[in-house]
Amino acid sequence: MTSDKQFKKAVRALAAREGISYTAARRRLTAATEPPPAAPGPDAARYGWDGTAVAALRDVVGRRGTVPVRVVEADGAPSSAFRQGRRGVAEPTADGYVIHELPHRRMPAPDPAARVPVPYRAADGRVAVAALWPLVWRPRHDALWRWVHNGWAVERPGDLPDGPHPVRPSPHLPYEVRVFHVPYGILGGEHRGAVPNWLTWGWCSDPERARELADAMVAHRLSGPVDPHDVEAGYVRAQVWHHGTAGPGAAPGRIHQADAAPGRPVVPRPPLGSRPPGRPGPARPAPEPAWTHGGRPPALELKTWSAADGWVSHTWFPGGRDSAAVTAVLLRVGAGGRWAFAETWEPRRPDAWAGDWTQAGRAPVDHHPTMGTAERAARIEALRRAETDRLAAALAGRSQGALTAGQAAARLRAGGAEYRDFLRTGAACVAEALHRARRTARGAERLRLREALDALEERHEVADWVVDLTLDHLAADPDAHLTPEARAHRRRALQEYLAPDADAGRVPGPGAG
Image 1 (cartoon, rainbow, N blue to C red):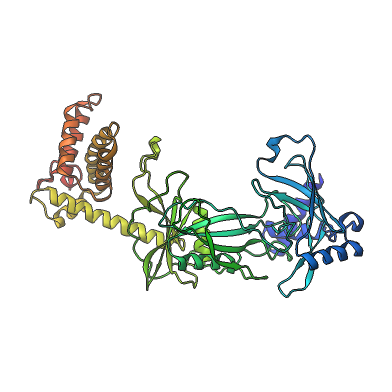
Image 2: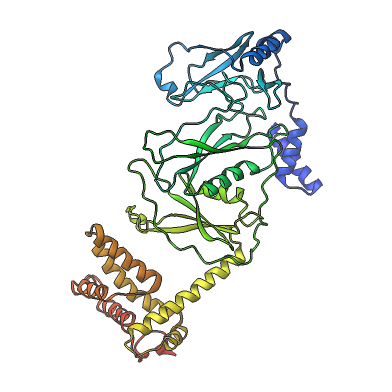
């Protein structure tokens, strides 16, 4: 039996004996068998931890506040190695640091247990010494080297340099929320290749909501620390920048900044599967802001709801749906925060299935807090009842007085699934005519056809011009490949869907009852 199989056997035995999960047992055995981590700076001579070097660096920081840096460039490195920035290893000296540049960004990094002394001026004015990993990097188009450990500037220890200024996506979204993210694992000594960096998290139309988001991003952690010393990972700083209307070349101004407190708590979340009371109806669709020409505008919008404010547009995100979900969690939506509910909206592209990415409005894709099974089932049942009511009302309206809404609803109940399938066949004839026309339509006409399809699919509404379009489509005999019985069935279904009469004996379902 191999050592790996022996270890797995021991894990299963521990899990059975203690009544715990396999994962918990594996973690316990791994912690018991792994050697203790090496102390920071295992080689004092190599990493500059002798008293003379540390005292000299402390004196430099105390007198000047900045540290001289000299770079030894890598010889013969291809230019493609630096497209994502440069990396190197910092070596402390008596008057600063010497950075030995790595010829390739994927070269092996220094020992994860290694630490170098980095004196910095603390908030109380004294010069303290931090123990940081010696790997450094310099972003592309930036003059400052940074410590991979926590993002500090090597030349300005203790300082997080501001990030690059993006282009404002819309005049209606002038407030940028920018966050500084330190990847988990670096402080614990397990580097995974990522580096601390600034992210444009979202854009707001209102400065109050931008400040609220910035404060929420650093007030809590998303999860507990992986390592006891890993207290500063995650989103450690958030800023709000105002991009004015002076022009695209004008620099934005910072109006707010928030920093994470050491030992901040994990963000509270609503219990999994809970059903919060009072979830409102969905937010109303709203037009998108006027986007600045060029670039890629933010696609996702987080709408938040409170009893006092109703639905409001909170933040637009350049990232994916995860950004909106993380924001809802950190805003404590439904977990004691200001907002009780929220929705994520994205562009609606109904023809993406056919490779057509034309946008047709916007639609909600996520609800916060997430709906549990019971709430989702109740919502689906409510939507089904509402759809039945709309269908009954539409049939009664097109019957020219032959049916009332109550009689149409009774016919739907009596006919069951067979009658509904019959009506779907009729609706499919209308949808087929609209889709055929949309293949060649452009501009406003294409949008009009899309709106007619939405009215058909969502409310069973069929305008007079859509009826004429459908009849013209059928006149071209698109069903020539079908049997005569199938063609007759489709035309009877279309007649029942567009103009039902009081005689239920000639349609499936009700006539059998």
